Length: 150
Image (cartoon, rainbow, N blue to C red; front, side):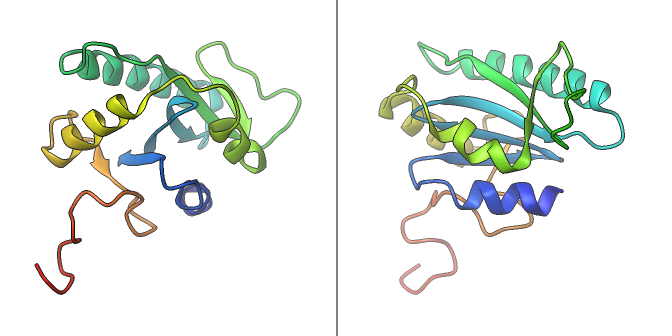
């Protein structure tokens, strides 16, 4: 499921910032900020873990930003009617892109730029830019490391 998750995140519009920490993913775009994880073997455990990670990540961001967006905790589920847990929002994989991209503007460009800068400096407590199973989602180097001209 991680590779499917990463493929969806890689297909998001370029203004979305994506990072990873273990199996969790951080996605911040103009429509919100999200910490996402697959349900794994236990939906309840995944929800508690992603909720805790969202709270911790928001605290880390608040150390660096004057305004910190709320981080929604999302767990990728199978889409069954019983897939509901109190600690996080459950989202079927096929609805993830619309969940992340549709809605009003909540995060401005200044916040996105600041978070990119924090990721580049390794100041987000372990979060790393991009996804491990798909090439990096955001270009933190201009030009990218390893490209001609570097």
